[in-house]
Image (cartoon, rainbow, N blue to C red; front, side, top):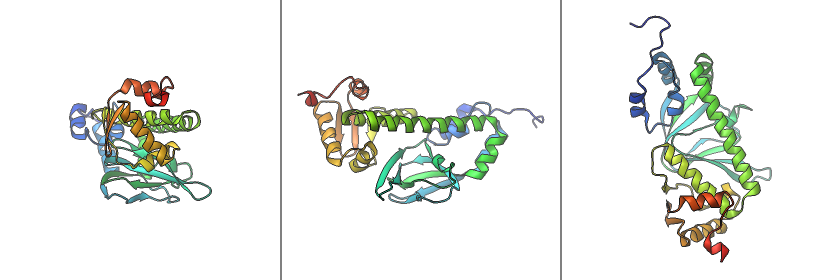
Length: 253
């Protein structure tokens, strides 16, 4: 029996093997988290909430009860503009958490909808808040996740304000690529569950513009398109384009 106060560090390799596809790895694997802390976190989590395509995880104005981590599938968030129009504000993939934007006002400023069959872990916020105050490693990791959300929002605002249509789409595809790579999946092969309309809405572009850009990128050998499956053939050119250092060949012609 371990001595009181001893830190019984879990075998991280065994946890990673069990959680390699689990979106909670960012919460469950801060270095130094001991077995008792992991057990307490596990008890706070309501696991395996299943959603069908089109199901809402929460609605605009719902009170904050829980944060959610995507285990599989994909979710889009949609906010309402002052004139009542809907605006896609984000896409969440496996390994990512959503609901942080509700902490400020204790209610969700957007709706979250499953883009396909999706499994999430529900984390009641009061329990997580209490546990984070007791476990410094978990609190630090939560701060990192929240900071990443802020950085992502800032980058999105800069993209909408400063980038051309080509640069926006290239940036969006590279973002999906990086997020897949973090999960150990091929960075060059994307299976996009969101529609072209959703992508255009998120990027501030008309559907016709998005469709035209996908065709142009394909004609120029940057990508291959088969329905919602996208092959990224030239990551370096896409990066140059996203950084404003290049155009597609057909755009220059």
